[in-house]
Image (cartoon, rainbow, N blue to C red; front, side, top):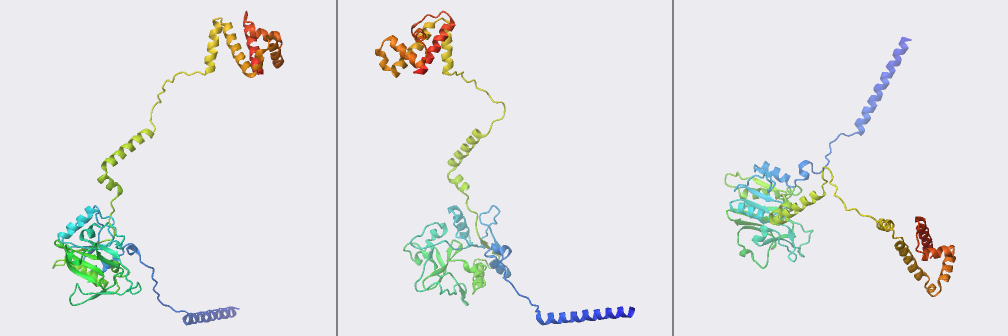
Amino acid sequence: MNNTRENSNTYSYVLLAIAFAVLAWWSYSHLEYRFEEVDKGYQGEARTNSLLAAEYFLLRMGQPAEKINLFAPDQKSLQEDDTLLVSSNRISFDQRRSSQLLDWVKQGGHLIITGKNYSRDDYISRDHILDALGLFIEWKISKDKPFEDDLPIDIDVLDDENFWQVNFVDYLVISLRGDKQWSELDSEIIWKIEDQDRVHGLQLRVGQGRLTVLSDLRMFHNDYIDHYDHAAFLYALSQHSADASGTGVFYYSLYEDHVSLYQWLWQYASPLMISLILLVIIVLWMIIPRFGPIIHVQQPVRQRFQEHLSAAGNYHWRQGHYSYLLGEVRRQLSQQLKLKHPEWQAVSRQDQLAHLAELSGLESPLIESALFDSTVERANDFINKIKILEKLRKCL
């Protein structure tokens, strides 16, 4: 029996080995091991920083580059040999902020900007820097060159020996305001990038520094920096304003702190802000609940008309003016009788008594005593007469 058990175990091991060998052979024949790259898009800072690739490129080239938050309280001071690229349209740049940047340029800095594009017909002056130069970014569509014909431009203004190809947005150009000519600009033109009379780039001398105006900055974004010679063009701009030692830093601004409405109102309408603050304080003082005991203010005692009437009747009763009280009730009943039955005025007293007896169901002597007898000897006599008169009033 032991031999039989050992033989069965041996057969099981052999079968498992054969099955494992077949599975390994099938896997090797049908499965393939390979690497595949999947583009997941931008990750991390690159999702919000459109110039991150440009910054890394300049750092690899040995050019110091750094993102800066313009007009922030902890902003670094710009030096004379630095370069600043403002990628936004500077909508939040007021006159004061624009003057600060131009003062830095006049001291030797290099500013690279673009602007919000308009057509010539609906141009709105909102750019304090370009307006001072008489320039604006124009949306200009050419019938001879459709959108599909998006070709780069050859640039040789920054290097006399080599030229670069830069793909500007064709329908965005730098234009002059009014009927000015390029020779009439107040600032000296260092170089100009043109393509079929369409100006896409311009560098001006402003004081001791330089101001570079580009029709668009798309070529420096993460999606386009590796196309054509965009990276070389950016590197040349970053070096163009540095001194011989090359110590200038290339700063770029993605967005700037906007002037808040509160700060603007406090600066230009401080009396209005003070009035609003005082109004808010007064309103809060009125609506906030008070603490402590409630002061009860004595209100004047007010009584109903029925109470006044009852008091007057009691007074006349205590004074013995029974005839006066009966006379008032009889007078009111007589007025009501004239209104309800004016035809009874022409008949005799007996006929009137007969009509009243018929309406009220009372006997004529009782009615006559209540209407015409003023003798009151006891309180019950007065009460009975008043009851009869009240019943007659209700019957009418």
